[in-house]
Length: 394
Image (cartoon, rainbow, N blue to C red; front, side):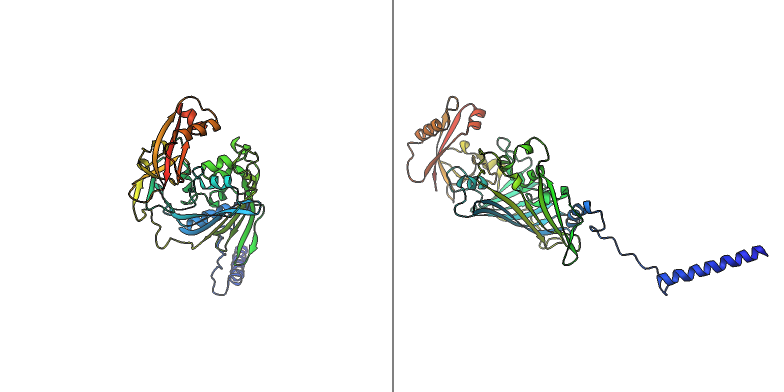
């Protein structure tokens, strides 16, 4: 009898439990689905910016626009990069344009553009395409593309054009390169549309990825070279409701030089603003084989001192080195014609003496559009002697 009562009591309890469960899940008996975890906001706050970067890359592609603003007093020099990136295909295309206000310090201007000393040349405007195999660069005034492949070090360990290729995005030099290492200070403030804004920072040493090699040498203060993290760089990151990064802004004043021997000493402010949009596989597809004539940089880009007298060259190679040129035909448009090459023996005599010797070496070529260039102290030491190139501007 007791066993029967126990079984009956168990059946009643089971029926009551079933009724209670039905009341919680609805009359139809279906279990209410828990809201899906958000790809970014469901994670711990410290990981949300990192996950937003990864989720942005998983969209397949995006358009981008970034402005880098150097300030000196009341004047500015602004580089604007616009382009598209195919995250899935590891390729991208972009254009770069510099706008430098009147009154901006001349030495700083020439350094930012990578100009050949005293000549109105430099990468004020250019286009480029990037993939895992090659970088194609086209100067604003050139009628051809330069194709750089493999390890891009044609002279003296220079690899400035590699800066155009990124690791977090095919298009390099953007704030995407530092966002995987940012440290959010909180979980993010809400913005319209369900997104969030994060105030964070990243180690100063990570700023290396944002600039080409020659500018790093002018910008980075001593702690960067010593291998320490350096002062934190403040950055603001905006993520939309779907977890995609739509904007990032950073104040890089801490990267500016603290010594008076830098060409950028008169620069007092530096900020970067990146905007992303048009998420999804790029349409049309991002191309990596540009239309038009393509020159092999390994054969066409040479040292200015290797250009034969009578030959013609363009001065903008994308390498941001004031002693590299592109050999081109004299029948078409060109920047300069080489009129002479001269060796200067002996030890480096100092800046005044070498300028005087260079002028004497090119004295037979005169005119308002003639110029000459000579070896720097480092180049002189490397070769054990100096060189002077005489040329006429076109």
